[in-house]
Amino acid sequence: MMHVLRRAGFGARPEEIADFAGRGLSATLDEFVNFTSVPDDVDSKIGTPGYAGTTSNGAFSPSTVINDARQRWLFRMLHGRRPLQEKMTLFWHNHFATAYSKVAGNTNALDGTRMMAAKRSEHPGRLQGQLELFREYALGNFRDMLVEIAKDPAMLVWLDGRTNTRRQPQENFGREIMELFTMGVGFYTEPDVYAAARVFTGWNLQRIGGANDANGYYQFQYIAGNHEPTAKEFSFPIYPNGSKTIPARSPADGMQDGLDLIDALARHPETGRRLARKLWQFFVSETLPPDDFLVGRAAAAYQQNNFSVAAMVRMLLFSDAFLAPANHFTRHTWPAEFVIKALKEIGHAGFSMNTALTPLVNMGQQLFEPPDVAGWDLGPNWFSTGAMLARMNFAAVLTSNQRINISQDARGKGPTPEALLTMYLDRLSPADYDRGAYQDLLDYLRAGGTWTGNDAQIGIKAPGLLHLIVGSSEYQFV
Image 1 (cartoon, one colour):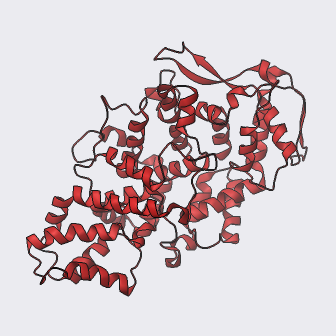
Image 2: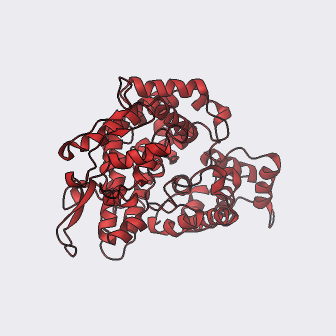
Image 3: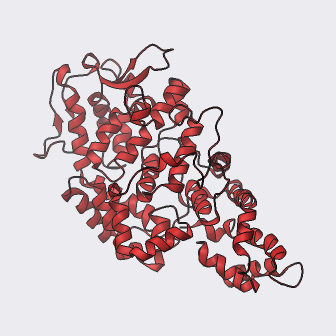
C-alpha cells in the first residue's frame, strides 16, 4: 500500500495509510484511477485551520501571481483527495514542458500567470490555464488533449505558434508535436517538420481588450488569412486509408489540416508505445528497461480505447510489474515529490507552502519553469551535489519547523534507540538501509550519553533523527 501511495500519489499521512489499507489495494487503485468520483474541493481548504498555509504579498491570487499559483499547486499535491490526478498533472507538465518566464516575457506577468494557472472561474474570458488543462485531461483522451494543447495560449507563446503565418511558417510546434509530444525521434523527417509548420499556419492568438486592460486576455483564434492552403505531404500515413497527403483546402477550411495531422499522430502506433514507455518509467521503474510485453499491452489498450490515457495507466498500475517488490524504490523522486512526501510523513502544522519555493529551485525544479521544451532531466540527473545539499537543507528546515509536534508525538515511544528508529522507519518511507547506514542512525541516537528515552532526550533526538532520514540517500527514491 505504501508503494502505491508513493508512486500513484505523493506518499501519505498515517491516517491516510490506515484509511486506504482498510479499503484494500484493488479498491484504492480503482479510486485513484476513477478519481472523478471523489469530490475536488481541495482549493476551498486553502487558508483554513488544519492545513498547510500560504504566504503572499497582498491577497492570495493564484490566477494572477505566479508564486501564488506555485503554492496552490503544492497545496493540492499535499492535501488533494485525487492524488493520481495531481500526479498525472505533474507528468504532463513535464511532457508538454512550458516555461512561465517566456510566456510572461512575451506578454506580461498577469497574462502569463493566467495562461499557465487560472481556473475558468478565475479568468475574465472563462478560459483555463495550461495547468487546469492538464488536470482536466490527466487520464483523458490523448487526441483531444493534443487538440487543446495546439490551441493553448501558453503553448502558442512558448513555441511561437502565434507568429505562424503563410508568409513565414514557424516550425517549433510542428517539430515538437512529433518529436516530443507524440511519435518521437526516428519516425518523422525534416520535410515533415516544414509540412507540419504549414499545417498549423493560422493557429494564432487574439487579444481581447486593450494592452493595459486588467480584464483583457489572449485566446486562441484560427486566422484564415494566415493559413497556407496548399497540399502537405508527409512521410507517414495521415489517413486510415494510408494516404500521406493532407489535401489543399481553402483558407476558411484550413483549420482541418491541423486536426487531420493530430488525428494521425494520436493514431500512429509509435505514439502509444512511446507514451507507454514514459509511463512505465514514471510508475514502474527507471532502473529497469521497460517490459516490451507490458508496454505492448498498454499501447494496445490506448489504441483499442480511443486513445485513452486511463486505459494505459490502469494497465500499468494493476500489473504484476508495478506491484513487484523488485520495482519498489526504483525511481528517483522529483523535487516536488520529495517535498510533498516529507510534508505528509513529518507534518505540516504551521508550515507555509511559500517556504518550499526557494528550496525547490535549489533542488532543480521550479514549477511552471522547466528548463526547455524537453522538460527536466530525470532520474539520477536530479542529484547534483548542490541539489542534494538543498534536499538535506529542506529536511533541516522542515524538522526544525515541526520540532515541537515531532517531540510530542514521540514521547513514550522510544524506550530504546532501536524502538524509536523502528517506529520512524515504519512511519516514513525510505528504501531499506544497509547495515552500516542503519548502524549510523543508531549511533546518532546513542551519542551524547546513556539512553533514557525521557522527554528532554526525545525532544532533541527525534527531530534530528527525522532530519537524517529525510536527508539520506535512501529517502530520495519512490
